[in-house]
Image (cartoon, rainbow, N blue to C red):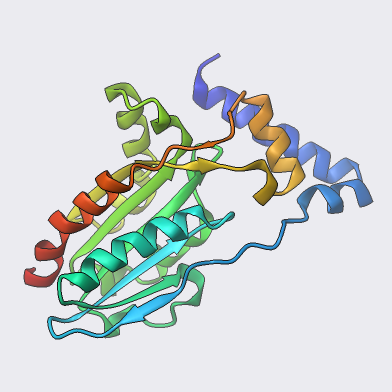
Length: 211
């Protein structure tokens, strides 16, 4: 059984638990309180949106690091959860990032791109993902992580893509999801490479602002 087949199986097992366990399922889906990143800065070279989809907050911290680099480069910038963005057309460029769960982008990110496709197609748009498999940064794993972007890449082609390792903290996610990750033998840890994240943002800045 390959990784994708196992992810589907694990996802199905979670779904069966939710359907069959009543109050236990409600407990299993209860998420701990999480503080999600949100920030802004003003600048003179155009306003950039850094929007993210996150369940446990760590992808928002990556979005915040990217935003700080853009801000230091002179751009006006907003970091927001993707579901809190009403109208991306007011921005000059957009950076969209998502955590990966069960081998997929979070659904709110896919919905955002599909809903706003006509706007995003006429402005510089970049994507990034944060996923556990990149704790082992091999070419095979990078190819798989890149494939996670296919649902949005096929709607809006990006000017840049960032593939970053993520963070797993069982204390910040719902018990059923934590159990699914344990089934996958996913260890807890923080594998985010902040130097690589900031370097990618620095390379992306002129593409976004001059595009």
